[in-house]
Length: 199
Length: 150
Image (cartoon, rainbow over all chains, first blue to last red; front, side):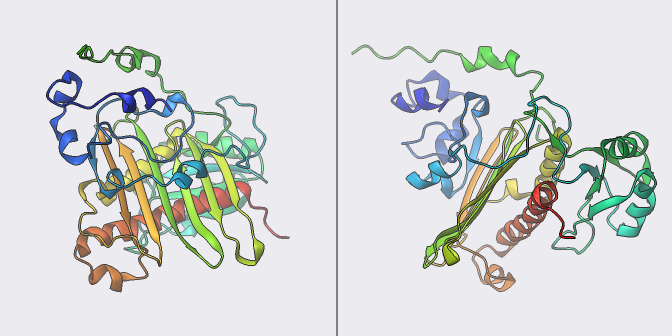
């Protein structure tokens, strides 16, 4: 785990310059957990937190159940074949796009009319807000082939639907999203800690 | 800060219990690199674990962040929420921008449980957010992996 080296260091608030910068963290976390860490077993350094966070919740004060860490550590999660690249990924029987910014009173028919001209809509999920009953704001649409989905994206992204501008894009990707500024963050990630006491 | 597309984002939700049919649980995780992992386990009738994973595009992560931001769950605290018990447990962990919450509580059967708790306002937000997130995840997973009969 990327944070393993932090956990091993003794936490002495009055001497550790690193911790003084973020007083809010001291109040919320238990003495055993000086820096907040994600409880689930996330493999790989790319998912370590980039810096001090304001933390809240019982989850930070509880003992971590050993089984919890193993639930997501296993590598046998099923997935569809992928080339590992950043492009869109085909789903089991078609290509799925995500529409966001959907008006809260939109109905399935409105989406059928707007998106049906690019190809036959194989699947449409227009989920509702569970509290209000209005449309939550997004829709997932499946087309049989790539060209139809791409046409829908190109034509509809940024256009108006029921007086609101919608965004349209692919839903699934072949590989991880590489943050553009990820490498530039490394000076901070490798910042050295205050010198240890020698006596 | 929370609205920036480049800010840190992570979400994990768990609901489960241990009983006659083993450790039955549902858990999903939105990771910063876009990977959505989904697991559903039960030994009911000797069933086994279902595990799926797929990479989501930044557009999907952005919508997930919007749903969370709109719920205002990041302003809440689980101090006064019921503790997990024999009936079950829920966990919600979210990192958004420079805030990291990790809430745990018992299962919520209905709004009655929400109303009669010590923090009905906060618990209600949690209750509905969890439902909205489940809707989102179930749609994503079933659309990506499930074959339509006929």
